[in-house]
Amino acid sequence: MGTMVRNVAVGALAVWMIPVVAAQFVPDWHWGVGGFAMAYLVFFTAGMVFAVIARRMGEWTYKAGVGVAVFAGLGLAWSNMVQTADSGHPENLWFFSVLVVGLIGAAVARLRAPGLAWTLFTMAAVMAGISVVLPSWAPPEMARRVAIGHAGLVVLFTASGLLFRRAAGVVR
Image (tube, rainbow, N blue to C red):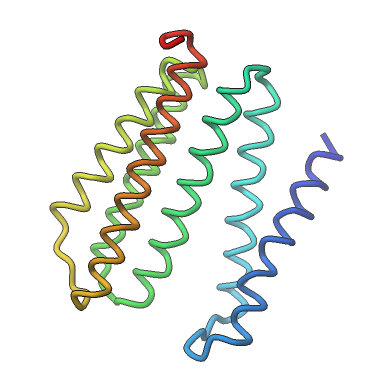
């Protein structure tokens, strides 16, 4: 277990270097120390979730489903933190409900593939619903990019659900 934590910590540090280096070159990037600490915590947590869950299962489709779900969840959390901070519109916090649905669904499913498939499909539906209902305050070009990003997350959550369905033996 100690080796796994060390490996995840080093991996999270490697990924964390991306925003650290980018902040040196992007003119409007004004994160404080707390922002960088939060980014590392998010990367480390995502890595630990993947490592702990995926190591329990031998089925490659289950591991791939976990990987895609964690990647999409990380993307959603990251983009939502940035979007909420940049826009000043706290209603964007509704997107965190997608992650809450995932956490509750994973707990209810007890990390079993059939339940995780339904959880990921539900997350995709909630993500799509919020994206359609929540008004966009962004200029048209930015709103288009945000819509494309949201559609990409819906696709990733759906793909993860399909991988879990396959791991459950529902689809061969």
